[in-house]
Figure 1 (tube, rainbow, N blue to C red):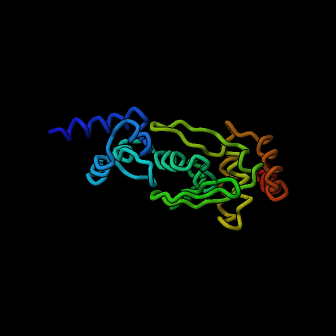
Figure 2: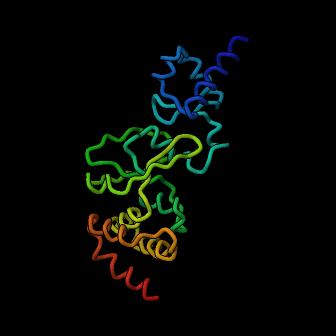
Figure 3: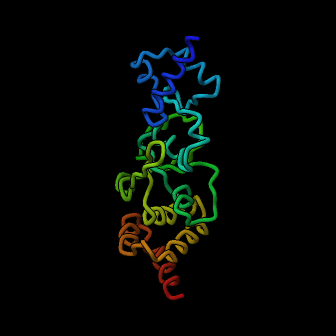
Length: 207
């Protein structure tokens, strides 16, 4: 009988913290590790990585971005990028099976149990350029804006696919509302893909 109030207190603690909590925070709140383990065993909590947990109901009742929140909660330096960002902005028909994330060079990669990640190491200038913070229903995550995403797709076109980069650019150019060609070319210059992208942009504009 004592377990139910204790379990409810733990669940309420998670809800007050946006559905996520670290083991240190739970211990500081006087919750016992065996009670946390029992809730994981019963499917009420899920472990994202050692020491960080999430309410399981977020995966069922949360929004479409909960996996991005999972990654950025467990891995604060991660920025959603490339094919994952392209998919988020509806600029591609490709749905990646992994979450594409960017981190600075020499970053230690934590072991995240789910979702699977594909990590790209960016130099400092490219890493910091174009980061936006998106507030989701549960938590928030960092993602590159559309212009930076397009430039990154061309920068990594040999690893991810030139056809995917071109598709993203074409869809971006067709969405006249909100597109910013000056920003796009500024980012392309920084990412050193201006010479590659310019002929495609010119061809699309002339259609």
